[in-house]
Image (cartoon, rainbow, N blue to C red; front, side):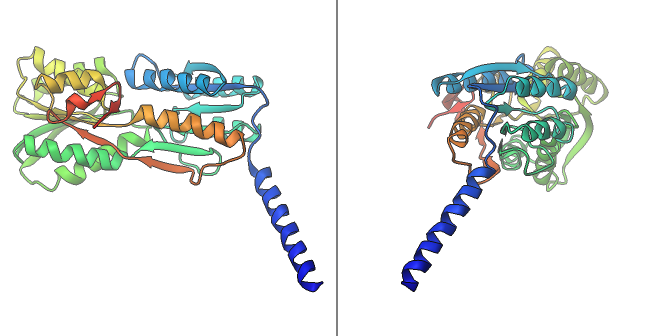
Length: 316
C-alpha cells in the first residue's frame, strides 16, 4: 500500500508540474490573426520576410496582418498595440532596435501574446518566446575570408556600416575585422554609416572614392549597401574594387555573377521566417521551443556557388 500511495503521489506531482508548465505558455489573444511586422519592404530582404511569413501562416490556417515599421520604434509600438487590440494569436517581428523594441515586446508579453523575433535580437531575454537570427558572426567571418583572398591580403579599403542602433551592425563589423585585422597590409582608410540604405551607400561611396582614390576594396554591412557601393564604383569606372556584403539578395547575386562583387554571406531568412511561424503555431498548441535564442548558420556565396542561390534560398 505504501508503494502504491507513493506512486499515486508521484503521478499527482507530475501532473501538477505539467499543469504549471502549461500555464507558463502565453495563451495568445484569442483570435486567429498573426501579425508580421518588419522594416520597409522596399528592401527585398524584409519583403521576403513578409511574403514567406504570410504564405506559411496562411498555409497553417491563420489570417495575417503584415506591416512595416520602417525602423521607427514609435511606429512599431503602435503596431504592437494594434495587435493587442486585435487579440492577435502571435506576433512575428523583425524589430526596430535592440533596446528600443523592448517596450513593445513587453507590452505583448503582458497581454499574453507571444512574440517571435526574427533577424534581429533585442537586449532582454524572457519576454520574447523566440529570437531566431542568422549567425552573423560566423557569416561575416566566412565572407571576410573570401574577401581578403580576393584582395591578395593587401591594400586600402573602406567600410560602410549599417544602422548603428542595430545589434547586427556591430556584430558584422566586429567579425569582419576579426579576420581582416590579422593582415597588417590591409588598411582601412574610411568608415561611414549608410544605414542599410542603397541610395545612401551609393552617395557615400562616391564621396569616399573622391577622397580616397587609392582604395581597392569596400566591405559593407549588408547587400543593399554593397549593391549601392558596387554601382557607384561601376559608374566611376572603378569596377576593379573588391566588394562584399551580407544578406544573400538576388541583386547581389547578379553582381557576383558579373564579377562586380566578390561575394556575400547568405542569411537564410526564408528558412528563419518559416521557423518562426511554425514555432508560433506549435507554441499556441502547447509546445514551446527548446531555446529562446536560436542561431541559423550563414552560407558564404562567391562566384563558385552563386548559381545555387535564389530568393534567399540556397540549394546544394
